[in-house]
Length: 372
Image (cartoon, rainbow, N blue to C red):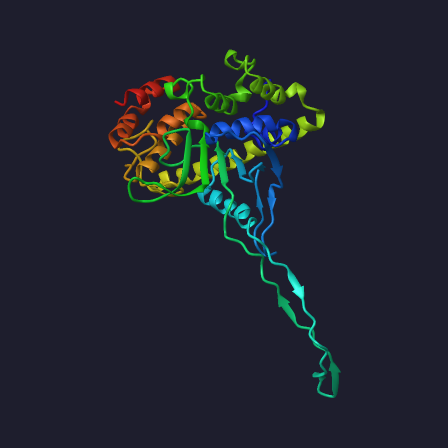
């Protein structure tokens, strides 16, 4: 049993960042991820349920939504398991706080002078009534000025083409020097599998990297690492994450959240593996979200799998992950990140050719690191 919660579960994430008592943690994380200058020093939570204009439209619900003293808004989502179109989802969710800033005109009723008019109620009767006309009041004047919106998605998987753990995107011009076209709408993805504290660029001397390390490995720690011990923010974060400090009800909610996470991942893995297995049997794998595999590597793999990979690199990467997970068990996050960063067809073919020789994750890691 772990000493600390997995803070990337729904319960753990909201317990850590979505509680009024922990706004100092929320503010620290937002300032580091967005690299804001000057930093946010005053933050309040907003209603995370954003209602649409019409009853037949979808509701937007975030993990948490907050605003600062200048009314800039910060929308934060934790998505542990892979979903399609996550970027589209971020853009869609950003439209709610944007639309909410528009000035609204109210409906007012203007009764006209009473006029006797004929209303036919049924063919046999004629009745007289009065008519009241409803007019729409003009909306208050508004010059369309908007407050800034920042959308942060923390992901338990790497997006296609990503090579860094934190990616900041804004709307820029296509032509050099690519100056910002609109700088009040920013999208940030935090892709935890790509974070590796052993790499120089992710050194734990930076506060942002400490946050990534904590988020990715909170449930792996049996004690608080030395790098966090003199930091009051993280001392508080570890205290909140410690299972012994949860009430009985909170522990129950956490276990339910953990089970939902496992169930979702298991369902996704089962669906992916069944689809791949069927494709292998037919010599053709199709329909992957991020690629298409046709066949597998030439020659038999452990005497059972034959075929030829002729698809996109993304498809071949999915095949590598499947093959090694079937042989060695769950793929460690750092190995998955290295495999997903491959962009050389020859290197992939070399790894496939040596599949039978690779019997542990460290051998595979070295193979990937050497690039031969």
